[in-house]
Image (cartoon, rainbow, N blue to C red):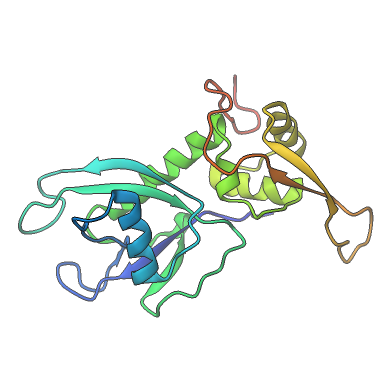
Length: 212
């Protein structure tokens, strides 16, 4: 059974260089704003994304030849949007699965993969799942999110045990609507915090069967 995959928002370039290729949204920092304000403004203005739950600096990309012509240094950021958010985006903008990325402009594929690796790392030792999950979720649904981000199927039982031990899950007292097959309604949970926190600095999630 194929689980969900991570997706990244890309827009198609309308100008040279790399006319027609897919690229990450970006732009210049205004004199009167800090970097996070600039990121949120540009995503809202250019691709109508306003529901970012978390933003953090990823890395500086400064290879002399990363962009044709005059040298351009880029500071990349990781921004996370909850899985239940489905914003309308412009016609030249699409969500792309990381497993099947199209040809991208400049070094943007390397930036995307760096962001993927950062997220995988953060899911191991922080409560980063809060930025991917809806306000309420079943453990099964949360398992699908972690599986998509980590790239392998995660055990729902183990995930619940680990996150409960770290104190980041809170039962809401509600249950999900029964599925078509009926059965006992699944309990709904939420994340205890609404900001990035280190919960286990030495933790690492590993694929099933991998040596510890």
